[in-house]
Image (cartoon, rainbow, N blue to C red):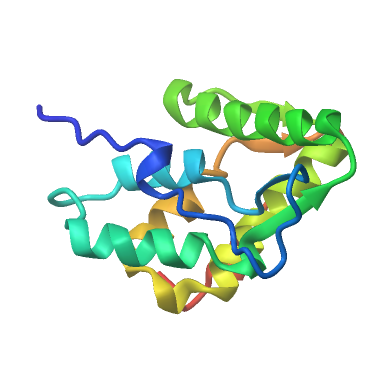
Length: 151
């Protein structure tokens, strides 16, 4: 079977200059890496270049940009995205720290709030990212009901 491959860079545009300070540590609220994983698990053909450009524009909006005071907080959120990707690819449960869970939950909420900027298939792919992702109390990190009516 031909597996569609996407790369985080296909979803990563410039951070908005109106709010960006040079040298600030920042990342996307909804990670480009997870956008690529969601796209890989969508049914159907590869997303068109034009649509990818639209998605990149949405992903680069100031509402999807978070600033950090420290590099370590940014690294923690990157580890959270890696854990979600691992959960999708392995089918195994992952447990996130409370800080990591907050980052992943915020990303899911961002997609739900901006679902009109993406296809229903992509939003459904995002929703399915979180099937095996739990917090340290054993609760699902993302309440998938936030996607009701959006997929």
